[in-house]
Length: 360
Image 1 (tube, one colour):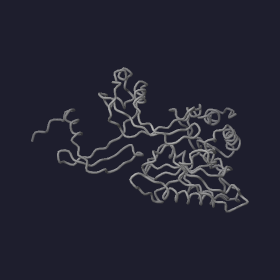
Image 2: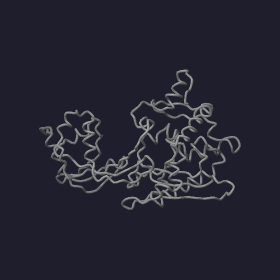
Image 3: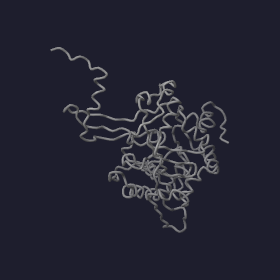
Image 4: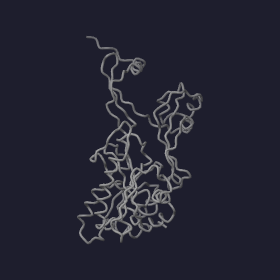
């Protein structure tokens, strides 16, 4: 039997418009990829749609920004703002070239400035304005290094550095939320308890959406629990005496995430679908817990060297030898930092080269 001739490019392209949807099989990558089952010419077919990579060519990026429409603000606090938007499609522009980082600037100059009314799925936008050099460092492409922070390094260098960062006003947006000045309409849960009148620091937390969540899909859920107490800057401040408080926070965080959050399509999240973790180093030095769906694809923010499971921290504290004042400031912590990070440039990079630390 003679082999079938190879399929031509035009024949392959003609198949996609013939696809007839039967059902959605799956949605993952935080809603950026979807798998569909259907038929083409009465034969079963499966299509996976995934948002193409954004271009890096300045001309194409400018075109992308100019195509944004229906920009709707979801919230704002201090210098942070987040939005949803649509992107209109320019007629005649090849989708692959618009999503390719290798496209040339000459191609962007030939783009038709007129746009059609057809729109791609919603885009999530985060705006930091005015941003600081520290924001630029955080979001820049850079190599990362694994470092080990000993108790001596922490107490001698990192803790004083944290104190200076807190004094620089970088927690204003957190205090704005805790004190009821901003984002109160976004607060999903407010858990307060004052069982111990002699300890005003024993209060609960506020839970609100993380700015990286689109506030729609259950599997993309990402929440923040900001604790009311201000004596805890990071996981380094956790001690054995905090275990009962941490357990209470964990239990109520999970309860709030599974009963007080509304998802599109009426989706429901079960307690064993909730993951809680703490960052080290955190972006800001006020203790907070990240609360995500277990199906949220783990990127850098959930990886080893960044995320420390809350349940594991509780267990580690419980099993530490010593009195109630024994805590996480007595152990080595290994994590990664970017080469543009101030902690690498002025601390760990210098230690590696046998130089004096200069975090002032």
